Amino acid sequence: QVQLVESGGGLVQPGGSLRLSCVASRSITDIYAMAWYRQAPGKQRELVARILNGITTGRSTTYRDSIKGRFTISTDAEKNTMYLQMNSLKLEDTAVYYCNAVHGGAVSWGQGTQVTVSS
Image 1 (cartoon, rainbow, N blue to C red):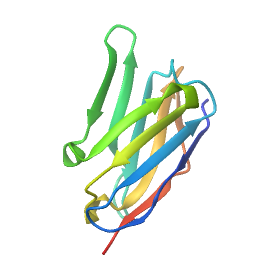
Image 2 (cartoon, rainbow, N blue to C red):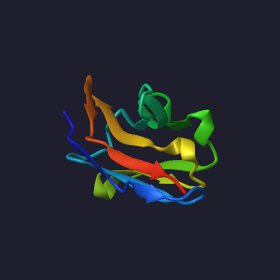
Image 3 (cartoon, rainbow, N blue to C red):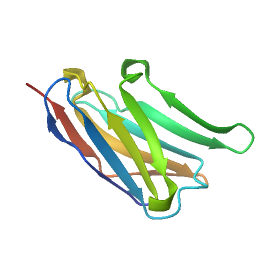
């Protein structure tokens, strides 16, 4: 199983930006899928963005509709790190953001990092 540690959350005003980081305990080059999820108070955890490394389909990214054009998921294999650049943040982006990895049949989660968008 992969150990994941998120960082980068905080308090930001509407329209502001944050960059979340997720450091993995192993190389991420062959991890099948890495993703960011979020969970707002009283709501279910939801997928924000995902990177898939399909053997036959290659690398692909997906985003939930509400964050398209504002958030960007990326990875740095040399640092075993996944990022989520969040721009033009809105009040409704407030949530705990979790890093997720799927590899070898196992699903791993980080501890979460709080993002609060407030004026």
